[in-house]
Image 1 (cartoon, one colour):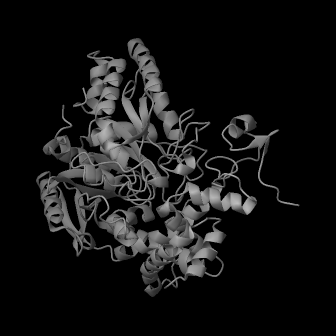
Image 2 (tube, chains in turn red, orange):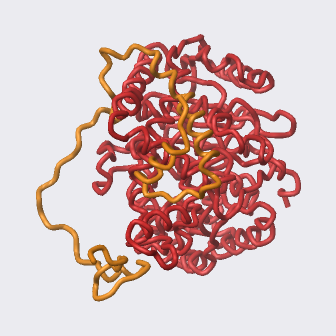
Image 3 (cartoon, helix red, strand yellow):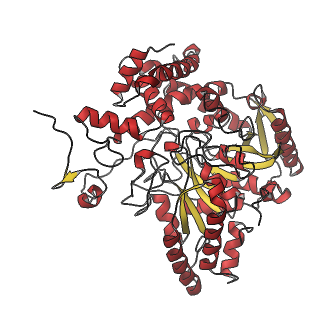
Length: 485
Length: 95
């Protein structure tokens, strides 16, 4: 059953080829057998899963099922889940059991999906390799000496290893797309405001966005259909109708205008990846697309602007972890200041501390204009580059990451080198645009992802563009050796 | 851009974040590198550029000032490290 995509599993459930309980048990057994070597789950929830599966089977029997009813999924451990530990990959929240469900979790529950557990991630979603998790790094199923990417590395590895057909992720600077690329799966970061952030632990509030991670664009469409939509509890959630994502999948691509930004193919890109991206673009030419070179002249400013905006918002958001209301509290504090500083010092790991410190500095008296305000202006320039580009083209294509998955420890001593692994994804968050990563080949036995970027609220178009490629190619069907059976 | 150990300690205090003494130099090094990397933003002329706070330039929604939340204090305090009689306990602030 694990060989089937989410859409195929839904069809199988509808035809009563198997029950949701059987499906759930099969996936739980795979997790138990294979995950000790991968570490993609922080918490498994077999009791909840089986109860949800039984309820789903009843719904299926009554003919009240939707496309996600009875389908096993897993949640990134950044989404609050009522009665289940929600750690965010941090010692700070190691014992935090959420009193409520995130909006995304509520919507999966209402759809009748079955939650298998909570997925590993970089601490507070700050990292590009999953090495900052308090629960230890996730291994890439394609080669366990390499990282799965981050921060949604547990989600990507679990889907790649066929432990779960679909998982949620969040993306602040590339945290859905880069791990999707490293693990050879399909991931979509929606337009900022498309999916509610309510109950999703905040990192950088003007950039964070949740999205689906699965094997195919069709599966991502099914998941996004449930995730997307207005929620008044998130003040930045956009009140706008959600299109039927699956209906648009089959649209033909004749005359589709693709832009290749020359800045995405310059120095620093692995030539093997460049070759595979061009080969994928050629496939689109065969599907009727028209390709032209474009320019995003302020692209080089995106990573530095991000490392002002994101840490500034992080330092503010993470101020709530004070050792008083929830989360880790130090032993025997001598006074209130000692309680705050030591609880936070013990609860947060090194990368989270670095970002809190950078953000605190950037927002401190006398520096706000030079850093945060300046970065917000750069953000406008980057956004304007995209606006101009989308006057000429329908979608932008390029690499998701400059390299394939790297080895553990390769970049952990050099924060800037690690930050640059998100060089092609960060600008999309700064502009608030939707972006996808789809598998387009292999280099040195490791998957390569291509990024597809669209205009605001063009998720239907992105999914359509990705789906048509997946109809014509089979890269998305490849399975890591040793995982297939 | 180079931060001294004393500056790192000052920022850490502003963030109410304890940092081990033997790691202050390493943080000073990393933070200086990151700030050096960010410095390239300064070379761009942004004199007439409006800062962008929201990707879609949406205005903040308003709602009527009605009471919509119910009292869930007991639920929310269930996972607090230390509470008594509905109050969060912290070390004595005033002698």
